[in-house]
Structure formats: structure tokens, C-alpha cells
Length: 337
Image (tube, rainbow, N blue to C red; front, side):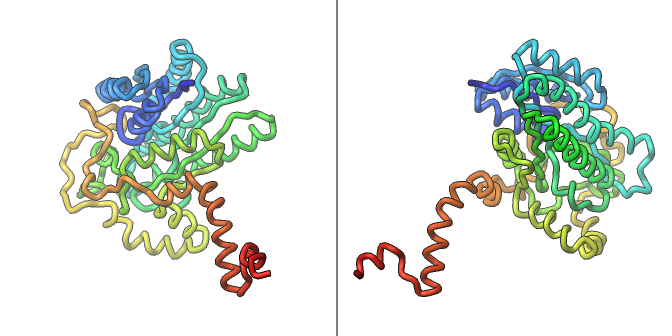
């Protein structure tokens, strides 16, 4: 049976790739974003790939619009099974060069947009005692980097909000699943349209993955009942490393975090950005780093198949242990009697 899914930030990047992934499962998808051209293109792609699309042009910083969109999806497609919070806006700049208005706007979209999306989804899912809300996070929700204080602060806030809400759902015996997916660096259009106050153009910190890797993780997370899903070895290294060596990473990122996030290309003066208004045109799914981005993550594959790997690994581990300590396997002992 096909699912009803809402994807925010669906006009580009991870959101658009996620819509494609659900479309291949023949889902009915509400597509939320501000840019109408990107939304229309995403809707056409969803229909081509086997899904059903409903475009919902709105600003995630407007809670009334988010609530109205959720109602419209349910009236059009039926009860929402999965809600994916993915919309974001960011600024590449040192903190002291960001105005209060800019900081508030980016935070309202990237953090409060997730809160408002969760409110709208949970209002409906809680009454039915089922459903899944996926929060698209980042390794930067555990390990912050320079030049992205707005984005990192919002992702940290989303993680705290999500963990708090999860405890309330457990307390109340509500069976709505809440899962956060911690992403690596991704080749999305955000590096083309984010507000940039640096002299050079921004880039993701290598290694870079294509948005389809993120979309695969989101679809998996939506059906896994997992608490969190970490995507790619680079995310695991950042999250675990920060638990043990936060001060060392502070100093390392102070030395490398600027150059690692900037290309050698000069930033264009007056380059349009999407902080307050969408950039005209269709932003597409990929950014400009296709030559560097990989389409696979062995770590994610292992995560998705950990049950199978565990089943296969236990007999192998037992055999290796037997060989190490010099104990014959049971079948071999029986044959020698």
C-alpha cells in the first residue's frame, strides 16, 4: 500500500532527492518549498518516477501556512504517514559579521521550520497513534564548525528539541516514531544560493556525497524505528571524535575549517541568495561538485543491513575464535570420534 509523505525543502538538494526516492515507492507526496519553479519541476519528476505530487509553496517560518499545508495534504491524499523535515537556510560568515535580522531569519527557517513541521505532523499522527517524523540533521549537530554558527546552532537545537519530544512521546505511550538522520557533506545547491559574506565561494567539507545517498538514508530511517541514523564514515568520525577530543577538534577546525569550506573562486558581488526570498529558476537536485561527490556509502549500506551482517558475523566470529584458541568446531569433533 502506498504511503502519504510530506517533504519540506523539496525544491532542491536532499529534499528533492528524497521526493524522488519516495516516488519510486509509488508514494503520494506533498512537496513543500518557497520556490515555485523548483517545486513544479520536482513534482513533474515525482510523477515520472511513479509517485503522486501535490505542490505546496510556502515559507516554513510561517506556522499557519505549515498547518494549512498539512490539512491540504490530508484532504487531498489522506492521512500523513511520514513527514520529512528538510528545509534550511544558512549564512557563510564569521559570527561577528552576521546581523540580528539575518541570524533570526536563518534560525526561523532551519530550526523553527522543523518545530512547526513537527507540530503539524504530530497533531495528526498523535490522534491516530501512528506515523513517522524524520528530522534531517547533520554531523554538525554534534560537531560545530567555523563560518556556520547559524546552521550548527539550528542543528544542535533540532537535536535537543527532538530528544526532548521523544521522551514525552514515550511517557505518553504514543507510538509515533521520531528519528534524526545525521548527514555528511552533500553536493546540494545550498552552496550556490546561501548568503555568503566571504571573499571566496563556499563548498562542502570533503568527503562529499551526492543527495541520493542522503535520500536513501531518509527512506531507510522512515521505516526502521531507529532513534538516529548516522550517514557515512565521515559523520561517524566527527560525532565520535567530538565525544573524546572536543578541544583538539576545536583547534584543528580553527586551522583548517576556513580553507576547507572555501574554494579558490572569488565570490560574485551581489550574488542572489535565498535567505529572505527564493532565488528565481529551478535549482535542480545536485550542486556544482559532481566531479568530487560519491554516490555510495559503505557505512550506510552496513547500517541498513546490520541485521544480516550480524547473522553472518556471529558464526564467522565463532569460527575465528575457535581457530585462535585451538578448539575444533563441533562437527569436526564429532567426526573424529
